[in-house]
Length: 110
Image 1 (cartoon, rainbow, N blue to C red):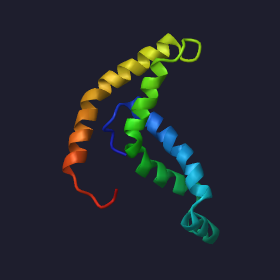
Image 2 (cartoon, rainbow, N blue to C red):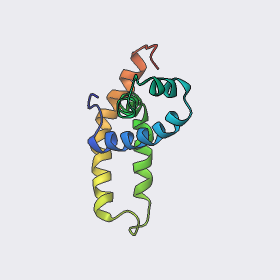
Image 3 (cartoon, helix red, strand yellow):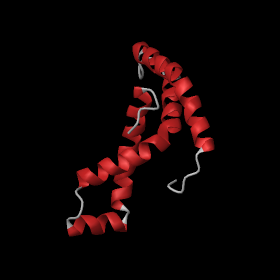
């Protein structure tokens, strides 16, 4: 996966995609069929899913991190808040490029 977002944004998006995979794996006939035939392992399927879905979750990851900034210090430490704020600031120019690319690229994959 190309790094066109700050590391913390990517990490958060991957965690979100991993959680979504649990829903996908339980409720997807194609996945269950491939697993039953032994054509794909859970690890392979998870890896492919996360790498494909995580970039689509960058904005959701940013929103989740922004929400962390308003949490009490007992839940999100000031040090963590500083790291999150720095990540969001560093990601801003990358985000602008993501938005421009998204507007200009026509893809049938999404």
